[in-house]
Amino acid sequence: MTRELTFREALREALREEMRQDSTVFLLGEDIGRHGGAHKVTEGLLDEFGEKRVMDMPLSESAIIGAAVGAAIMGMRPVAEIMFGDFLFRITEPALRPIRNILPDLGGIDISPVILILIIIFIRYVIALYILPNVY
Image (cartoon, rainbow, N blue to C red; front, side, top):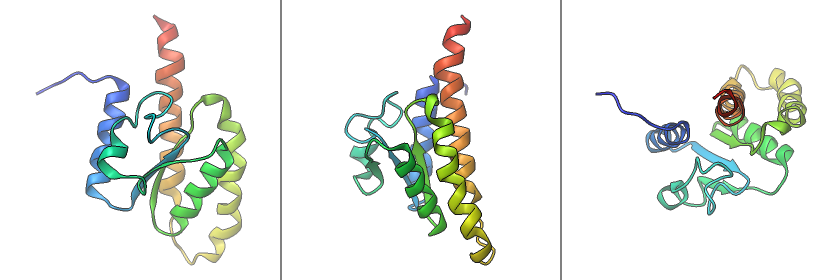
């Protein structure tokens, strides 16, 4: 059976499904808890999973990405929400520097999923929220 979802609903559903299946998955970002995020993708997830898995972070994209990378290094599966596409280049260096510096010392631990998740979700936000609405 096919059903129609908005991009926001599909993301929320995917996050909910992964968080139910894997206790190491958690969300972090600005206003994603109580307010449901700038684009309401995380709306309702705080009530279901609590503050330990849906974490509001300070207004600092570098801190969000730094926390996500650190958590991934420790074996968690963070999903970081960055409000707007304008900040992509500001977070690239803080995200990649620790990996470049620490990766050789980790003895083969693979932390690439956090980077892929961040980039994929970020690109999807940019496409869905900024590019597609302007096409029509």
